[in-house]
Image (cartoon, rainbow over all chains, first blue to last red; front, side):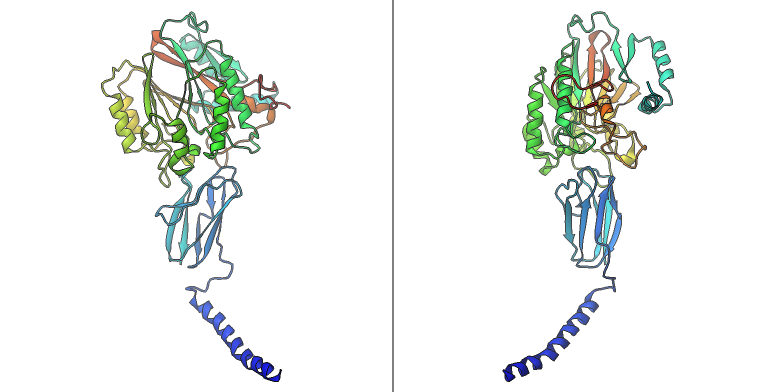
Amino acid sequence: MNRKNAWIGGLAAPVMIAVVLLFVGSRSVAANDQPAAANTAVTIDNFVFGPQTITVPVGATVTWTNKDDNPHTTVSTEGVFKSKVMDTDEKFSHTFTKAGTYPYYCTIHPKMTGNIVVQ
Amino acid sequence: MPDKEQDLIDQQLQDLNNDGVDRRGFLKCMAWAGTGLVWTMSGGIPVSRAFAKGYGKNAGKAGDFSFVQISDSHIGFNKPANPDVTATLQTAINKINAMPHKPDFIIHTGDLSQLSKPSEFDTLDQVLKGASAKQIYFVPGEHDMLSDNGDQYLQRYGKGTKGNGWYSFDHKGVHFVGLVNVANLKAGGMGSLGHEQLEWFEDDLKGRSASTPIVVFAHIPLWTVYPDWGWGTDDSEQALSYVKRFGSVTVLNGHIHQIMQKVEGKVSFHTAMSTAFPQPAPGTAPSAGPMKVPADQLQKVLGITDVNYLVSGRSLAVVDSPLGESGSSASGNGGGLGGS
């Protein structure tokens, strides 16, 4: 018993230090000091992607939600992502692993355009 | 008629032609026109009747015929603007079947379905089976292209067509062309015909006598109705240049779920009402899309288009009529809307 406790006690400190280092490390891995609440949500309504342009960190997952009473799609003009048809209340998500600017539009109503800036 | 309803009708009529002519002025103009058209008000929307001998009695000259355009049935749509689009389509078919002069065929100018689902196309086919006009021609709307490249639509309605579903045919001396302007749409753009189809169209018209009446039908308007809402076709100018030399050209479109008309030289443009739901007049709402109206008004803002070809004038008379009068239920099957 004692040996076990000692073993655990002995491990606790290094484990805690490792965990702290991990957190510190991961925070500095992000390119910018983005606030935790970077907006990664796009709402589709009234034939508009809102906000039309959002900026997200590398690795972020953007989710589009269709609140319109029309179906829409979200399709990258460069072929990076392509949703299937979203009816009302349906969603589509894409995780951006590379920095860059990603223009997209609705293939059903092509006047609807938007931009995801990943940095 | 209560003032509010009268104002709504006046506003609709004012918006119809967007040329500043109001209802009273419009009727005065028509009386002067002396074209032999008699205009009556039916459910608040002017409806013309060709005032020609033998009209409506099927006693016209051999070669006279009529067909009906329906549009934007959106089978599968089920939101407040119309919870039962199948019923209103049925009303439209009943209306066509009840017409005193039988149309030779029906043209559907697209958005047959809401989401290109097989079940939606199946339901549409069920309803259309009840049409006494057995020949029905189609062109797809953007809502019919939602399964990969519109393959569902093409499998069902695209036999004998080219590319994404374009084709032409002749009927009693009139040349009909069905165009597809809802495929491969580019970001920020409107409708699009594309090079391949334009080349085919130019070739299709080659060698035809300029006295051949031409009817072109496509889903999205082939003239720029309202670019902010995508109501136009980016490369339609090119297509229209091919028909310039013909003596009578009629362009029939849908997509905007309201009547709009324009005449440019010998080309008459016309968009049809939907059989499913209306949309707002350009710029009168934050966006296009389904517009809710009071239940007893719905039948007034949905409708069909009767097109009559008279050999004598080599001209086509386009006659819109709403599905029903205000406050009354739909006749025949599929009632339950309109005041209930």
